[in-house]
Image (tube, rainbow, N blue to C red):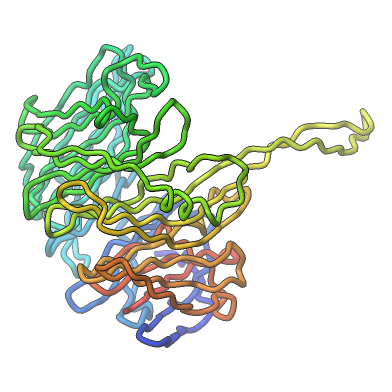
Length: 486
């Protein structure tokens, strides 16, 4: 295998009070590299990282201290293909890839052992034939959180509207345990995918937002649309218009495996403005699609002031936060995690000199990104607010798509940990907030990344064990991985 990356520096270990931080050797980014993914850990604690190149597939194995042990090229020979995902399921690794032959696209997988040795022959999962007037998305692959199931799915479109969804669920032995398709509503419904999840039992859940629905003037009776696919064309669904007369403007969900429920929550507002007045909470039976419980909770004036108190804005309303997590509680409630996000595009005039035409003035667009406070709302099984808290932050950047903003999350089922860059500059501190079950927060400064020449991308972080988070870093065209061990 040709050398693709150049090692630049040695392993770094940072010890803080109660945490250990291991930083891998920086590797020079190749122009051929188009992506990477943190796959998870082996039983001995080694970390697997997939690196995708234009013409090569490679997996790196790091030890517990993030030393690079070895790399293995897993490029498939003698075929033209595109790898969609590498996914670890149980004691196997699956390489899902698309292979094209004329107008037919085949989705296949190749299995490997955990020692990265090829196992058996490739297996065909699905095929798509391109016909006039039809259009399909590429295949998407996700896995269940417990690494027992994977799902491959694609969307079909009629014109610009999403019309159908096709999916297959595969277990850790590589067997297809669900082959399903469902059709979305066709009247006054323009579906936009919001979230797709695969439960610990291999049950898919899809959430769509209807772009034809507006709070001010309702063009449709569906605002959000849940689909719970079954075998074949069987499925149940849940149609949401409003919650207790309120217009839901942002929504997410989590799967409560212990109660076999989907818990959904989001922010609602009134009078058509993009402002939030409170939160909605639902419990849904995925077998029947019935809503077991729904309620709406309006913010108190004190909570509104707390949410907006640190924000430098002239508007006299509470801005709508993005729903980033809905984490089920043991009692049937949920923790709703929201984050303020805003993207602005500003136009600037600039003048440059052209030797043929002289000075010319043009307009340039500049994109600004803001990721600010994290709102924490703990909701009981009746939809009432147990407690609330806010993690204050303000991350501002431009022309970078916000890759170093937002946060990474560790959930060890006793506490939650939120990790993020204090500011979007290479010299800012990395902060860790510990959230206890009663809502109290403990703030710690972990380290300053400039000393280790890394720049964390928390939004791309992945929790790899009950107390470990791996965060990628790209700094000066060098790629490194930071493991935070609690």
